[in-house]
Image (cartoon, rainbow, N blue to C red; front, top):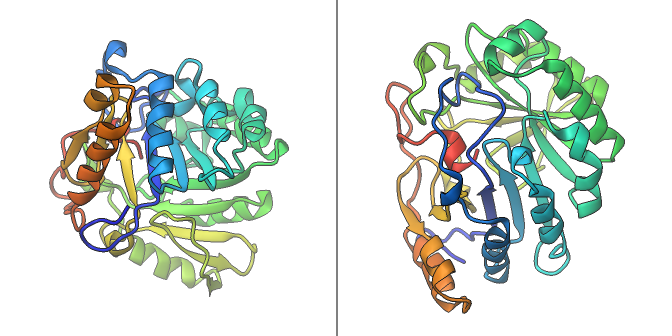
Length: 323
């Protein structure tokens, strides 16, 4: 699949649910209203959609949410998708808050998942509770340990927040080095009505310059197919990534589209362009109309996002589209 700007679309991110057991302050409101369950695609429908994308050239699938592992019976979907590894699909992975990892890590590894991203913005227990509102740090740490024991490679995703965790970057780098984890720092993105976002926004170009005064950052050509740009930290031997939608956007190399749990295909995280795939999916067991709808979406993929921290780029929360 080739979009209008010559980019090869080979990466699909699938939000299996908009629900989450955390309420992170930069992601969603504390009193979130979630989608009615009868609007969601079934897990069997999601697998059929993913199979169509694999047939059309997608080689990497990432399951997201919300928190993907809170969806009932989600392991059946993961196990089903794992059957396509080596048969068109090259990688199956997921992004998680870690709360359910202790229960599912072994099953993920058995299904063919080899690496995961874990969202973790602080190692301070009290601060973690404030950021996530409902989360417990110990539960996440136990989940990370279980994932390591299962043989999963882990990258920590840390959203950089001014006045919140900007005093912990060195601590997180050191801890990731000790644990053998990669780290990726992420700028906040203006999605959904979330309070105080502008006050806590940090430009990672400034953070990187400050870190470079204390850590030796070696050039790296490592890439995962996502938007992060990586260096290797000489002191730890681990990778450090930066996702910078403001200070250096990543649109020119975008290779991905996003599918929501209701069957809506978004061609860009920061735009409203979308195609309904649920209707053709349910209209026929023949995938011809479904594939035609997917192709219409790819043909409408915009050149890039238009993020401005002073305003909401799109009204939907990150958990609706999938991070």
